[in-house]
Image (cartoon, rainbow, N blue to C red; front, top):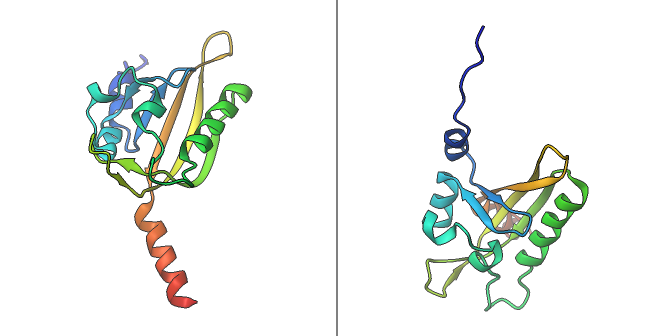
Length: 145
């Protein structure tokens, strides 16, 4: 039986979770369709940019820790060559280039893509928007208190 020919680019573009491919310097090498939809950005706005230039912390939030926490996770992936699953994170997202940030919560997974040498060559970053779930949880906690 012949092995099926798989178009891995098409697979990446259509996986049902928002995903980025990052270089080891955290530059966006590719972005899938779900990520573009969730982020409200175009491919041209993201490709070739540093992740944290494209998605900075909310400058109006002195307690913002999204960049710091995500950087730590990505560095763990580079250091260990193992996936890193993050607990839900508050990471506000800028609406377009407006300077206005929306409060969002995300679950994020960062996983290495190893080269033939066994070294991390790319990182796949997935992010699921769990804002509605967090808001419902907080509302229920407030109501029950």
